[in-house]
Structures are given as C-alpha cells and as structure tokens.
Image 1 (tube, rainbow, N blue to C red):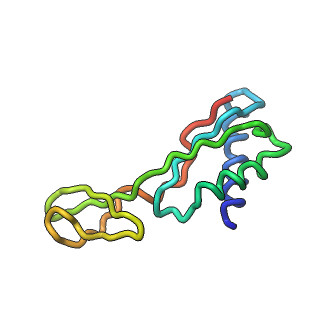
Image 2: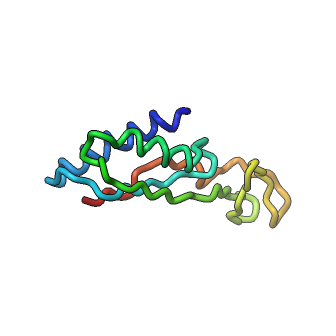
Length: 113
C-alpha cells in the first residue's frame, strides 16, 4: 500500500508548513488528489491515521478533494472528462486528445492549525 508512504510525506510536509507558520499543532490537512493519480482515498485516510500518530498532526483530520481527470482537444478547443478508465477521445469533434489538463494532482492545498 503506497498510500502509507504518501501519508507519511503529507504529515512531514504539513509539520514543516505549521512550523514555518509558527504553530506546533495542525487540525486539518486538505489534499487534492487527481482521478488518475493512482491513490485510493479510503486507503489514504487510513494511512494518514497511522502516519499522524506521535506528530503535531496527532488529532488532525484529512480532507481529500478529488480532482476529475479532464483533457483538452486542440481540434475544437473543448475540455472534457476522460473518465475511468480514461478515454481520450473528444466527444465534441470525435478526435483523439493527448493533452491531459487535470487528474494527476497529488498536492497539499491547505494546512490549518
């Protein structure tokens, strides 16, 4: 389960952010996870509970914002959901797209203390 290593990295980065902001306690961490990032939100929540113990995030809550995978069609300038499994064919003009705009995110968007 690679979510444990991801959760550990989230805890470490959130602690650094909190220290930089002059606080020693974190109550909420919000992360953005793309649909194609290969991260299972439920597994990430469980791993976060394990990784946060004994840290400044011991009682913190993890909020996962899921980002829908979207592609851009250069042929007709349309942006469209690619779905899961991903299908990179523009529904507007019936052309293939190779430009994934959203869906691979894995980032901390907020740390609250």
